[in-house]
Image (cartoon, rainbow, N blue to C red):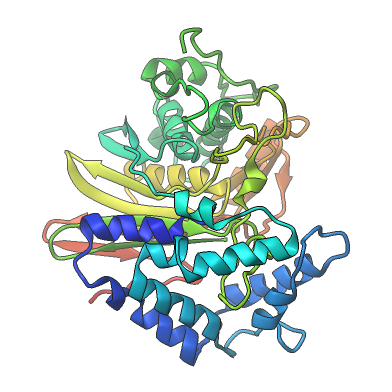
Amino acid sequence: MPGAVDAWWTLHQRYGKLKWADLFAPAIAYARDGAPITQNVAYYLGASLRGFSRPGSGIEEIENFKSVWAPNGKTPEEGEVFRNPGLARTYELIAKGGRDAFYAGEIADTIERYFKRIGGWMTKADLSAHHARWDPPHSINYRGVDVYGLSPNSQGLATLQLLNILENFDVKAMGFQSAQAIHHAVEAKRLAFEDRARFYADPDFYKIPTDWLLSKAYAAERAKLISADKILTPVHPGQAPSHGDTTYFTTSDSDGMMVSLIQSNYRGMGSGLMPDGLGFMFQDRGELFALTDGHPNLYAPGKRPFQTIIPGFATRGDQPWLAFGVMGGDMQPQGQAQIISNMVDFGLAVQEAGDSPRWHHEGSTEPTGEVASPGSGLLRLETGVPAATQKSLAELGWKLGPTDGGFGGYQAIERWPGRYAAATEMRKDGVALAY
């Protein structure tokens, strides 16, 4: 179910200061009059066209995608001006009619007709029944900094679990970008991700042992499994007590309000399915359900799938400190933990923390039921990780993979006394702006 529009509306109803319709004016103008395509978007558009057009892709129809994004048989290249009048009209309807224009009006009628035409099941009644909800975040304290994460069905707890485990080690003494610092962090990630695969699901359908997962005692227990001179194999989730592509942005204003927000169509550009004439594509995050009987994340009617998008936030002494995000699927909690560690353990500034080389571990058990890769998985190290560190990690037994660019995309705003500092990075299209 597409939830972004209702999320915007819900946020605006509680915190908005400007008129709802005014918020859409720039996007409407860009969609109607056109804007140059950035390098990153151009790359993913081309990849999406190839993927959607692949024989056996299973997508019911892609003609609407091609008519909007590849009318001449190819997607726009970097710098080419792209227009989307269908999306401009959709935004105009939402600007005028609010969330009901999408979930109960003309747009909902169009969506229902589209799915009926292609043999799908989404109806206007389904859309009308959807409402965003306020879920309180969870938090842990990492060396004096309170770090917040969204509750499941997201993976926000993974960042917190990873940091909780890492807190049991003197990471600063190990040294910045050292083999031992990276080794211990990756092992903490592997342990947290096994719990992610076992316990993270829609809490309306499964009682998640959240307090236990985030307890310092459990983190200390898990930390004892990590050895400085060898890799933990195999990795298992903890035994719970028996009683129980993505866009990130952050903004702040003169009143001290800070917002950390992330939204995503998931893989590539999403599902490939675009309702007639509306100019947008449906997300495909239902892909992250499990299909194994008895799994907490098992597909079921009315259930929210496990999903990866997690805006980040941290406070110091009960005062807002850092609104940040690291885009990129399972890289998000790994990247968030690295940002916090870079700033808290090694004293890096908000820009330096993002520019620092990152690691990305692949191969853990997934919440979809996919089992862990043989051995210890694959550890990718970004260009800039010292050669001596790479050599030491290989000697420890880590299987090092080539640098593939999958190290996330970081944006942040840090609150200073009476002012802000903002950061963006070179890995994604991004910009830091003051106004």
